[in-house]
Image (cartoon, rainbow, N blue to C red; front, side, top):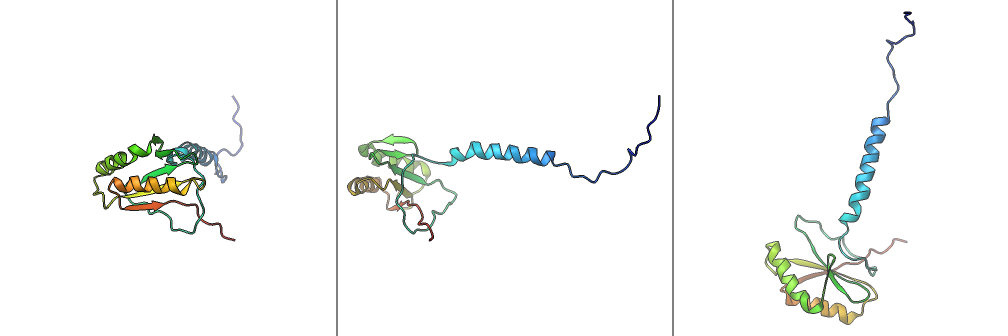
Length: 142
């Protein structure tokens, strides 16, 4: 048995990036999986307007969506206009807030008729909600 005399005791000054790449790939996969879950509701083409972003407080926001066919959704649950008021009352009761304190946000496709949006707002108000916010897309800076 012969002993080789190459310098095995010297320090290696190279950085091993393999663990870093492994962690980055795991994070990438996690973000790719969770991003679609964060999106709530139905896809609509929102009108553009200058507005302030919605404050993300600790409570969960109730978002009512009206798509271009005039169908009404709360998250991904489709409702009729007749059932909307009762569903809003139930959600407010579950949130633990008083109806006058709860805010509801309305997302309506820009192709929906104005009358349908007004009927939806009327049903939301009949559920005891006084604060209704309209969600829009921000204007592009030129």
